[in-house]
Image (cartoon, rainbow, N blue to C red; front, side):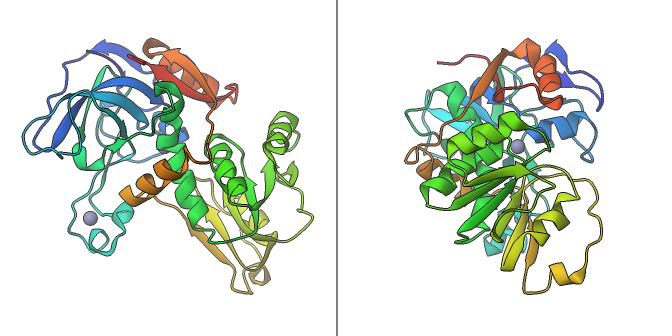
Length: 331
Ligand SMILES: [Zn+2]
Ligand SMILES: [Zn+2]
């Protein structure tokens, strides 16, 4: 099968003919239809995340159809079913985290397109217990960004509880999807972009944000919660400073530059800083149920598999107009 392979970080992916993966016990063989790109893919390519499997097939927002089901696989799938394969690819089910409904923190977790091969290829195998049915009403390209930008965004959003005034720092793919859910649930949205990024500010305003501005500005009201999607450490004290008492700052990214020091007075008043790590299967079930009801709309820019490097470059330099989605066998 054709695959785009990462041999070593900081090198372009190589288009290669590799052998088709064989599903083991409990796994599905999936013919990949589409695979959306995530900022994490960039962090892996750029060597910002430790110990990826090498050589590696990236991609953890995989939409495909079940091609083969060996013995022992989850009976919720049949040959031909459309499935989504997300970032969380496997957990041990027995560590202290797994046994306390926190499988996202599993010590031995494996991750699609990072420690196991992902979807920048014609086929992928996945543990059936971690695959999902996808809502009808989305085509194969449009549904793909829900699988990570949507899921991680949703987990970040849930951490903000019932915050009325919600700030979002960095208005990329995850922010765009989760802002739609937040507005649907009646939250007031305050969106912070890179200074001078008028286009993003305009689109946030159009979506329904109450206020838009630059990340170095103070919002007109104190916030009950803020989610930081940009991988920029100095945004943490900035967001903290914008919080009302009892507010929470949620860092939604897997990688961030160092956080500068800040006065304790900004944390005082029971303010909280937390991060979001990975996702649980429950997050996925909840979000995939809510998304079509909002309905959450995705914006995509599609590329053939062999143009993955071009798509990654455009993503890195901020030139994409939507989530990059690789098209393989899409309907
Ligand atoms: Zn575990
Ligand atoms: Zn991701």
